[in-house]
Amino acid sequence: MNILTRLLLIPTLLMSFALSATSVSAFSDVEEGSPYFVSISYLEKFGIVNGYDDGTFKPYDDVNRAEALKMLTIASGLFKDSEIKANEAEEARPFTDTPSSAWYTNYVAAAKDEGIINGFPDGSFKPTQTVTLAESLKILFESLGDIAFLEDNSEHLYNDTSENDWFVDYTAYAASEGIVNIYSTNTISPNQDMSRGYLAEVIYRTLTSDQYLFGKATYYGSALHGNFTASGEIFDMYAMTAAHKTLPLGTMVNVTNLANGKSIEVKINDRGPYGPGRIIDLSEAAFGEIAAYSTGVINAQVEIISSP
Image 1 (cartoon, rainbow, N blue to C red):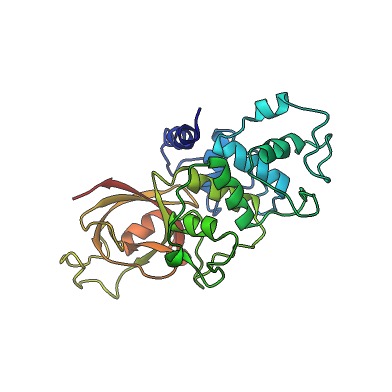
Image 2 (tube, rainbow, N blue to C red):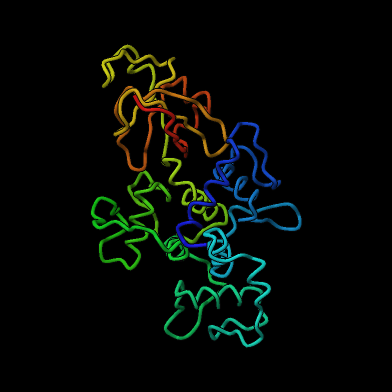
C-alpha cells in the first residue's frame, strides 16, 4: 500500500461514523465537554490511541518521545502494531539510550530506518523526554510522506515562529490546515510540551483535514440583529446562519463542537470572523445549539454540505 493510499484510507474509515451528540467516550476521564472529546473518542474506535488498564486515557498527561512516535507512526498507517511486535530483533539498538529490551525500541528502529527520526548529535534519542508540538508534527508528516508543504510560509508565521526555524515547514502547513491551535495572542507555541489529548487532536485533524475545516468558532447576536449582512440579507440572531471569511455566500455547512460532538447546519450569509485562529462566526441561536454561551469560543470542525 503506497503512502497516498495510506493517507486516504484512515479518513475514509473515520467518516463511516457520523458525529453526533450521543457519542460516548470509551474512557472514564474523557467526558462530554472535554476539549478532546471527539478526537479521542473516534481515534480509539480504530485502535489509533488506547488508554490505561484502569479505563482512563489521561488526556492532560505529558506524552514522551517514544509514546508519541508509536501513536504518530501507527496513525499515519506507516507501521502496524502487530508487524512491529512480530519483527522484534535482539540486536536492535538504534540509539545509545534505546536498549533492545525496551518496548519502544522496535518502533524507534523502524522509524530511524525510514528516515523519520535522526536522534540527537550525541547518539541518543531521549525516549522518555516529553515531545514538543514541533517534534510531533515532524514525525507525523514525515510518516505520511506525501505532504505538499507550502512554497511560501509567510502567511502562516506567528508571533512565536519565524522563517528561520527548523520546524517552520511543518508548523506553517499545520496552521494552514487548521491542524494546530492558533491562540488569541497569534501564537501556536511550537515548543510546548504535548499532552496525550492534544496529540490525539493533532492526529485526528490531520487525518480528516480533507473532509473538514478546523478552527475556533464564535457567535454574534443582539448588537448586530437587524443589520445587513454581506449577502444583503438582514441578520437575524435567531436564524441558523454564520459568517465565514472566504466560503461563497449561500454555502451550507455543518459545524461540530469538538468538545461534545454536537452539530448544527447553517447557511453562510456574512463575512468574518477575523481574530487569530477563528474560522466561523455563528448566529447566537446556532451557537446555542452546540455550546453554552458562557464558553464564548469553541474548537470546531466545519463540513461543507452544499455550495450555491
